[in-house]
Structure formats: C-alpha cells, structure tokens
Length: 120
Image 1 (cartoon, rainbow, N blue to C red):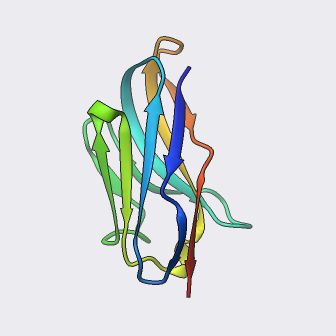
Image 2: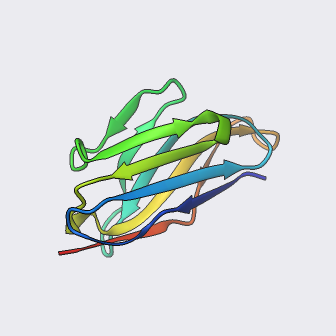
C-alpha cells in the first residue's frame, strides 16, 4: 500500500518561515502529480500549490512569491518552503499525490495533514 506522511508544521510568528515535507512510501512505480492543499476552520479546502510529473508548478495567487515547492524524485518527497507567513496562512495543510503503484495503475492519495499556525 501507499502512504503519505507530512511533517514540518508548527507555530510561528507572522513573517516567519516553515518548511513542510511530504514523503510517499510503498510499492510505488511512479509518482505523477503532487501538491498541497489547506483547510482553515469553517472554510473549504483550497489548493495551495501543485506540481505535475513534468515539473510544471502552479501556485495559488495568495501564496505566489512567498511559497516555493520542490520535489526530490529519488526520495519520493515534495517540500513546501513557506516564507513571510501571514496569519491568514493558518490552516491544516494536506499533501496529495497521484501515484502509480502495484495496487492501482493510478490513484490519488492524501496525507493526514499537518497544522500550520501563524500568530499576529
């Protein structure tokens, strides 16, 4: 089976930085698209950033210029560097990955989330 594990969340002051990691493990043939979503209390889950298997990256307007996504294919890991954090960035951040594995030819997996809290 395939598992996604997020890490790196925490509590920071406005203007601070965090680096989130999402590692995929299991019987993986290939990871296609990967990305991050976030959900604040009482709000809908929203896309933060997405990267295709070919390396094309798309950021939400609210995080452009502040967040940077990178991918280490050898480690099956994606990283989200978050700088100049704002209180409105406070949310539960979820990793997702479109994975080809021995179980499924292609399936979208989700992590359990990591909390990011930015104080003002």
